[in-house]
Length: 98
Image (tube, rainbow, N blue to C red; front, side, top):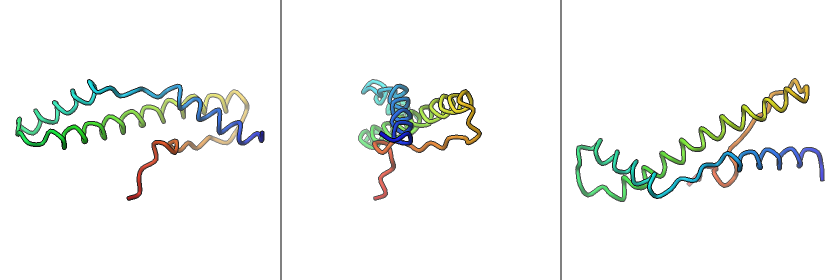
């Protein structure tokens, strides 16, 4: 296995370690907050649910990337590397271009 491939796999493992599972309760709470923010206007429950899922996933990914970047940067500094790592979202979280 090449050194570059091992580094990529290590970074993917770090990302997986920091992934927080978003529960239905989390989504329900956020959807209810959206419902309240709209002035309790009914008829938007599916819209609120989908928006709540989208918001929570985006927040989760933002926190993940920050944590992982900090951890990987620390590892690079400890290894004496002068090149800062550049991280991208894992393929499973990449935005759908359609």
